[in-house]
Every structure is written in structure tokens, then in C-alpha cells.
Image (cartoon, rainbow, N blue to C red; front, top):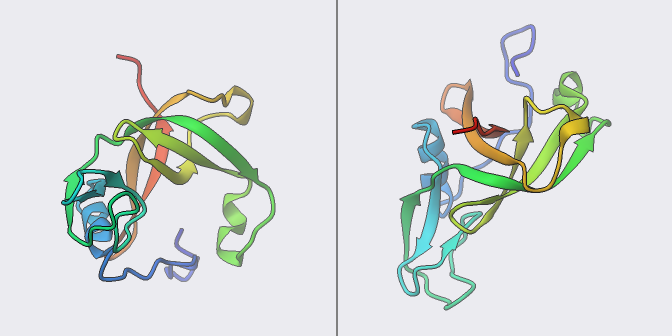
Length: 142
């Protein structure tokens, strides 16, 4: 969130050579996941080596962005001054259709209606030039 001075005052990620394609994908409003070129296993968060076969060869695939709630926590205490205005907020762990888990802020779901298995999807918010972050919203019924 931008402060009154127009400066983004939250902690920001520092992309590494292994995670740069992930962050670039978010800036294009795409959720990209690593795919091992050795065994085909999808992994998230980006890392240099496959935990399944130890291959260092990696490709990137676009994820569906859909999943279900696995767990969550409701944050009531600001760990950093930049998030104080967001309190309370929900941080959810979801199991993506692609078979990996991801953490992100969940929006648009009242805490009293949270449940394991709740369908959600990834949305994107450009918080400052060159930085788009994922968040989760409830999946619209088909």
C-alpha cells in the first residue's frame, strides 16, 4: 500500500536469479511455477534444484491459479509498520491445482466463513512500478 507520501512502505522481495522469472511473470499477471526438466515435478517457491531428482535443469509453466484453502492464519499484530493499516488480515496456504502449495493474503472472505477446501484463485495487484504481488480471492461458482 502506498503511504500518504506516495511511497510503498512495505517490505519487498529481492528476486534472485532462480526466482526472477516468477516475479517477471507476476508483473505480466501470470503465475509461473518451476517445472523440473529432469523428472517433470512442479515446484514452488522457486529454487535452484529439484528436491525429487536433484536436477538443476528447470523450465517454467503457467499455473491455473486455482486451488483450495489448506490452512490459514489471521494476523492481528503488525510485524512491520507498513502492514499496520491492513490489520487484521488473513494469510492462507492453498493447494494449487498444479499440485503445489502457495501462501498469499486472502481477501474478500469473512473470517467466520473460512474453511478448509474453500475454492480460491490467484489475483494480482501492482503495488508499485515493477512489483506485482499475488493475493487470493474466492473462486466464483461455475
